[in-house]
Structure formats: C-alpha cells, structure tokens
Image (tube, rainbow, N blue to C red; front, top):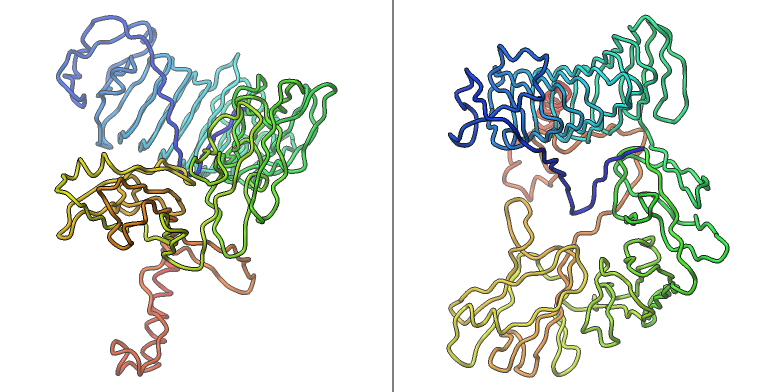
Length: 532
C-alpha cells in the first residue's frame, strides 16, 4: 500500500512531467492567468469527448499547469493532460478529466470534480466538495496530508477505492457502486449506492455496509507490516505522523545477516528512523551475505555503551534505530560521531558505510559556556543560535578574505553549517544565516561544529594560542508529559490573550485591579475561546 512520508527538517514534492503536443490556440481564454503572454497551446488528445465551453482556463499540459496563476474563486478550470501537478491555485471549480496521476498542492476550490484519476495526492488542499468517479477497471487512491480539509467527498463508482491520510474529510457519500472501499482516515461513510459496500476500516477490520447505512470511522493508528523473505513476520500499529518503532524485530535468513528495513521490496530505499508514517506501510527486511557485511564499532569514551552494528555496504547510520546509534555521558552533550579519536573528522549520519570502521563519540562539556580544552582549543557550549563569534586580525583584511581563511568542520546537525562574516568596529564576527525560524536567521539549534583559524586571525575572546573553537548551539529540550482527564486543554493558537500570574506588589500593570475585575476578565476570555 502506498503511503505518505513526512521527514523531520524535509518536504519532497514530485513534479510529474508530461509531453506537450499540438499548436491550436483555445478561443476565449486570451492567455489570462498565465505567467507570460506566450502562445498557450492545447493538446487535443486529452479533450476527446469533453465539452470545453464555459471554462475560464483549459489545461492540457504540465507546462500550462506550471504557468497558471489563478487566485479567484469565481473562475473555473478544466484539466485534461494525462498527469498533472497543480500548486498555489485558488478557483471556484476545478474539473479534471482524462488525467490518471494527479497531485495538488496548496490548492483552494469550492468544488473539485475528478474522473478517471487512479493516483490522487493532496497536500494542503481546501475544498468544500470533492467528486471522484473512479476507474471501473483499475484501483484508485486518494492520499491527503494533515493540512488538507475536504468538507464533503462524493464517490461515483469505481473498482477498488482507497482513501488514506491524517487530513480532515467530513462526510463520504458513496453515490454509485464501488467494488470495495478502504478508508484509513477519520470520516463518516454513507452508502447511497443501492448495493452493499465492502468497507475496510482504519484498524484493518472489514464490514459489509448495506445501502442506506452509515459508518463513522476514526483513524487512531496505521498498520505497519514487516515482511522478511516474502513472509509477514510482524505488524505494529503506529500513530499517524510518528516514526515506526522497529526495535526488537530482527528476522533471520540462513546464510545471510539482517541489516535494516526498507520501504520497497527491492530493498533500494532504506527506512529512516526520522521518517514519519502517514498511511499504511509495509517494510521489507534487508539481508546481506555474511562475506559482504561490514561492521561499525563505537568508542563512547566512558559514555553509555553502543553495541557494534552490521550494515550492508551503502547503508547509513540512519537505517538503524536511534537508540542504537546514540550515546550519553553525565555532564556532557553528545555531538555525533567522528572518524578519528581526536574528533577532528566528523562522520555524517547520512554517509554510506562502505567498510569495517570504528567511530568515536564527540562530547562537549556542559560545565561552562566557554572552556579552553588545552592551549590551542576551546569550547562554546549552549551557544545562542543567533550569536556571533568575534574575530580580530593582525593585518588589514576584507570580509571575503576572512571568510576564505576560516576553516569550518561540521559535527552534529541536520543541515551543513555555513559561516557568514561581517565587519565590526573592532574587527570581524562570524555568524550563521543558513537556518531560518520565524523570519530570523542563525545557526541550527542543536548543531555542533568547529571553527579553525589561520595565524593571521585570532578569536577576540581568547588568547592568541587558541586556534580552534568547538561550538554547540543551544537547543531547547522538550519534555513529554501526560494529560490529565480532570483538566480541559486548548491549543495555544486558540488563545486570544492571557494574563500572567504575578504578585500585585511586584507589577505596576495590575495595580488597582481588583480580584473581581480579574475574574471577570478571565470569564470573558474563556467565552471568546469557546465560541471559536
């Protein structure tokens, strides 16, 4: 079963390209809504039997879809081009015909009308009504992400139809018979087809839904099936939007060594422990011949032990459970693995393992914000992600010259660190611009890296003997707590305003405010929140 992937720090959009043909200009469109005034061509192959009258835009190629710029909920769009990717569109109605592969991203419409689509994918789609007429000879699937909201879905026939995803689907009405319907989502299904409906529920169970009956379904977990050498070995239920727990599932195969789990039966795409599940998933065991296997040994320098791991050549550390590729040490922060014992050559989690090797744990002390390790090295712990490292030079230099002379060695982190340099009244400073949050730029929180300087440049805050500084950027730790049934919780973005609890004698803002006035204010805010 196909599934969505949502990766921490990654979002992938696959643009499906189609070949365009023909050169007839569509009368009445006048190229409105397209990014330039180039002649808009129509591929008549996909328009056979379709009445194009009444549409503001007719799309018959991916090129036209890429050029389309519409943000008007009174406009109508007709798409007929084999396969299509549409993004950033707001329209009244979008009709899709003779198009089997459909991907919509950040599309808003009053109504979506799709016929003959076999693989439909929605990301951030908002629609009041979605009509789907499935293929009578092929399976059809609709996959939606958590940002998609469909108020009403109408199914008008089809072979086998699958609906899956963690987005919002209101009512699903089956108007015409379908061979079977599998739903891995939260919604209400009503059978109005006149025939019994074979319905597969989110938990994997099935029922026969008579015509006129309804069933309310709730997605709580996805089934993750583990297959080894063609046989199912385990099934685990996983909460939508979370990684799969693969610990403890280690199949065996005579003459081979199990290495990791893959997302395809051919074992070409390893499952990463940072991949989140948003649909039913099957994982396949990867085996390698014992003679071809490679072993990674971990030196943790008195940290918690990490057992040796076996890999097939080309696999990465991320193909293993997180608990098996990490370590900890009291009073220190673990910053990743290095190739050498002195931790000057980092080994990335995404780097393929090609041979037997030993990796060494990189630890930075938590005892002091700045600490000299020896006469030439220093550490900066809990460094502000928007902080700057001041430099001074012995000779006159430009910003570009300083940037070229400074050496950077990355450590832990999802992103490769990039240094920027600017001139200051006392010299220069190093800062980060490669990570962005809330329209602010800086270093990636939780990252570690080492800055090394040549003889003509010095750290302003250290003696001239210090030639390198290892930086650990501060990252806020999130504590997971349980919820109490005795307390009502609301999302932070539902809060209109709030009043911090302070002592009156220490706050000028609360001076003169009586307890009665405070209680009345809180009651008014509670009413506003509940009314939303």
